[in-house]
Amino acid sequence: MEPITFTTDDGVVLEGELRLPDGEARGSAVLCHPHPQHGGSKDHPILWALRNELAGRRGLAVLAFNFRGVMGSGGAYGGGHEEVRDARAAIGRVREAAPGRPTAVCGWSFGASVAVREALDDPRVAALALLGVPLRPGDVRLPPLPGRTQRSALGLPVLVLVGDEDEYSPVEDARAFAADFPAGRLHVVDDAGHYLSRREREAAAVAGEFVDEVLAGT
Image (cartoon, rainbow, N blue to C red):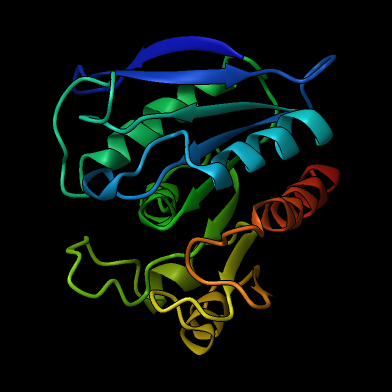
C-alpha cells in the first residue's frame, strides 16, 4: 500500500492510498467513501474489503482516497458537488498505474452518489459499482441523482448493490433505479442493512465478479 497525494483541477491536494496487484495490472479502480460529515473516510470496512478483492483477487490497481476536508485531504466539504472533482482527479491518478487499461469506479452511500454523477460525462469510466446508493437520504442533503433520461443515456455497465433492509436504498427503489440503465443490474444482499455489517466480503466479491466481467469484455 503506497500513500500518495494528488491534486484536483481546482487546486485541492487530496490524500490517498494506492494498492497495486502482484504482476501487471489488468485495469484500475477508484473507491469513493461515505458522507464526509457523518464519519466517512477511505478507511471504512467495506472499502477495505473492496481493496482486497479488486487488487488482491482481481488484479487491479486500486486507489482509495479521502474527499476534500477529510483527514489529511485539503479543502473543505463541497456539499457533494465539489467531490465530483475529487473523484475525477482520482481517476486520472489511478490510470497512471494502469495506462490504457479500463477503469471501474466503486462508491458506497455518499460515494455512490458522487461516482454516478462523475461518470455521466467521463468516458474513462468503464464500469460503475454503486453500493447503498442513497435513493432516500432522509434529512441528509445531497445533490440530485441523475434522472431517468440521464441514466438511460449512460451505456456503461452499472451494478447497484443493496441490502434487503437498507432504509436509504429500499430494494424496490433500487430495482427501478438500476432498470433505467441500459446495462444496469441489481444485486440484493439478504439480511443486510445500509452498512452491510459482517457482509463486507460478500458484497466486495459481488463487485469483484462484476468488474471481472467488464474486464473480460473489453
